[in-house]
Image 1 (cartoon, rainbow, N blue to C red):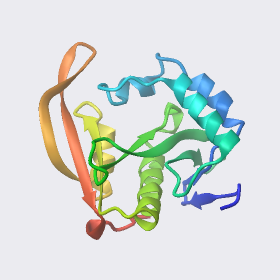
Image 2: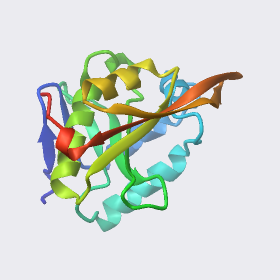
Image 3: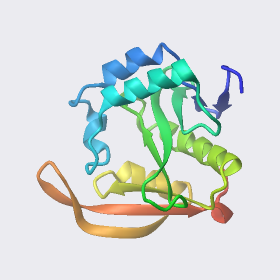
Amino acid sequence: MSDAFIIKGPNAALRKTKRSDIAQYRKWNNPKLKAWSMDAPWSEYDLIALINWRKKWLDEGAKLPYKFLEIEASDGQHVGWVVVYHDYADPHMTEVGIDIPEDAYWGQGIGAEALALWIQYLFETMPIQRIGFSTWSGNIAMVKIGQKLGFLEEGRIRRGCMVQNQYHDRINMGLLKEDWCFPF
């Protein structure tokens, strides 16, 4: 793939990291951003480590299939990223994540479209049969995105996480390859 690798949808695109994105990551390295209050409360984000990972990827290149891509809105603004990882020791437990720190772009369908593009890419390029994600009951937007894309709730850990000194349920959602239908 060339440096021009891009997956386009009507309102969002997924692309490789550019050096100019590093400044955006530095801007997002602010614990008071609204986005971080909605993210998975059981894992602490270390954006400095993420920035270093992106720099290393830029310096050394990445192996295919890509494990993360940047999200760009239709106006060209870099608004976040998608990632794939194995959350458990079992390599068949493929999980995805999405972050859009630019809250001015929330509620426009960009997250759902970007995640759909990402899922399509992963099912086409990786030997996987299932994709999952975990969120919490207070992140209603993420639950709705999952439902819109065909994810089913596979588990709920009642009072499984704490956000702002209140207990919330941890929700595990999953999607089988045979049930996937690209919605855009």
